[in-house]
Each structure stands twice: as C-alpha cells, then as structure tokens.
Image 1: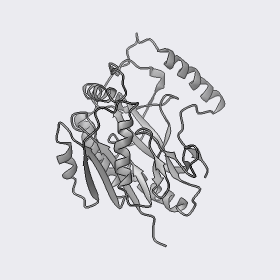
Image 2: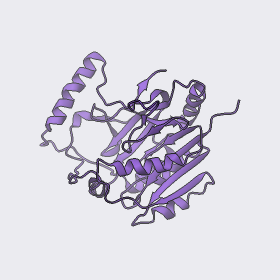
Image 3: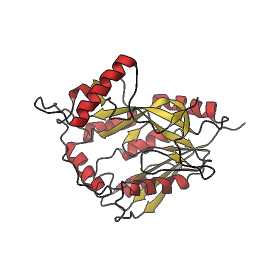
Length: 290
C-alpha cells in the first residue's frame, strides 16, 4: 500500500513588512509534504518575490486580492485559508501559519502519525502541542489564554471549512458543524508571532484590526503577567535561527508596576485549579478519539 500523500498550505500578505518568518515556515514543512500551496495576497513589499525564490518544485503559488470590506470577525483570513486548502490535492492537508514552524527533529513523528491513523476514518485530524514564544525566543507563554493544542493536519477527503484562520469545522449529512475527531501528532508547532519586534507586532495588529471591526491595541511586551511565562529549554528549528538573529526581540523585562487585567486575574485562578487537579482549561477545537 502506498503512503498517504500530504499537501502543505498557507496564506500570507505583507509578510516582510509585518515581520513573519514565512520563508522559514514554508521550508520547514517541505521535506514532509508532496506539494505546498501558498496563497499570496497582493502586498506592499516583496513577499511574493521571496516566496517565488524558494527553490522547490513542490511550491505552488496562487495570487489573490483580499476583500478589504470583509470586516466580520476575521473572516477574510478564513477565505484565504480555504482558497489554499481547496487547491490541495493530497490525502491530508497540513496548514501552517506564516509565523509557525515544525522542527526538523519531529518530521518523522508526524509522518508516523499519518501512517498510523490513515486507515482509520474515525481520525479526521491530527493535533499538535504548541510552543507559544513570547517576548524573546527564551520564553513560552503557558496559560488557559493560550491554546496548548490545535489541529494543523486534516484529511483532505472530508467536508471541512474554517470559520476563521485558526481552526476547522466538519460538516456532514447537513448536520450542525462540529469539531474534528482527532489523534495526537506527537509533535509541536513552534509559534514565533509574539517574538517579532515590538514595532512589527504593532504594525501587524494595526492591519489585522480592520478585519475584526475594532481598533488595534497598543502592544508593549513588558505589559504582561509574568506568571504565564516559562523558560524554554529545548532547541529551535534550524531554519528559523537566521530570522531569530535578524528580526526577533533579543530581550525584554516585565514591568514590575504592571497591573493585571480582570481576564488575567481569572486565568491565574484557572492556572491554580489546573495545577491542583490536573485540568486543562485552554480552548480546544477538536475531540480526541485515538
């Protein structure tokens, strides 16, 4: 029996201007996939040229123009995500955002998980553990506010769609959409969005906010709950290291005078309950079945 095929896909716009490590992101997945579909929105920088410069016959580019009037809860991101997914031809489709990477040491684990579950139709998606780096690449954020696991690899033979850029819903037999049934991928997603320069993050949120019909918050990495941060003791993917050197924040200090928001106070309480009772209150867009 032949191996299940895997398509990688993503979308990106103004990736250089907004500080995305999108080139490293795409390259990190290329050894695993049979093709990689990249939807590139019309940009103000050389994002398209940089994607074209990735030297791989697996990369297939679709150019788009975003609907600037679509300001309903980030649905434009869902539109771009699904343009890319609908162009995928593999048995499975692997979605990787422009600030996410997979580690070269875990590619074999992902392949093994696909092979293990491909023959079981009850498993519709694979779930990855997350490293959300914050402030600098030396720290990760870990609290109920940060999703600890998420689906990033889904069967490309079932009816799925994205209500926004982050997650999928499954539709079948005209029933109410539901979360995918999933198994663990036994691998991590390395999420670097919150270690890009503070200036680049502010530009990103300024652009994102108009698609959510609200004003952009002012970003200061120092304004954060220190109890959420944990030291990162692992290794970073090799491909992201040049970006970390050139574009990531090198240091930051939590403001000792920072006052927690009501939301952060609630999350502190939930963290205490998690620790005491072995619970996990972070949001989940899947149901583990294997």
